Length: 64
Image (cartoon, rainbow, N blue to C red; front, side, top):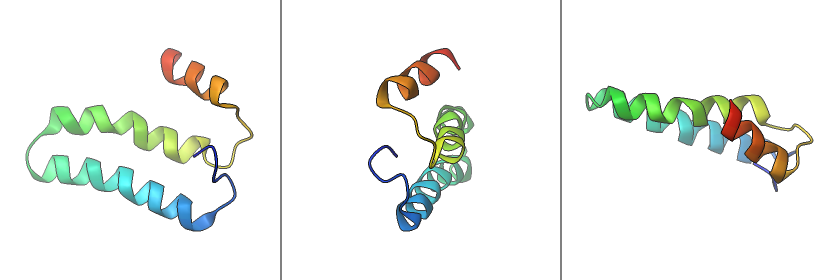
C-alpha cells in the first residue's frame, strides 16, 4: 500500500486479496473472522493512492 501508491496492478491484487479473505471466511461460515477482515478491506480501498506516510496510516488504523 505504501510503496506501490500508483501501481494499478498492485491495487487490484490488494483489493482482490482483501475481498477474497472476506468472501472465503463467509463461505465457510466464519462470520466473526469476516468481520475482522472487513476493516482491512475498507482501509485498502480508501487509502489507495493517498499521499499518507506510514505513521499517518498507523494512527488512522489505531483510532478508526
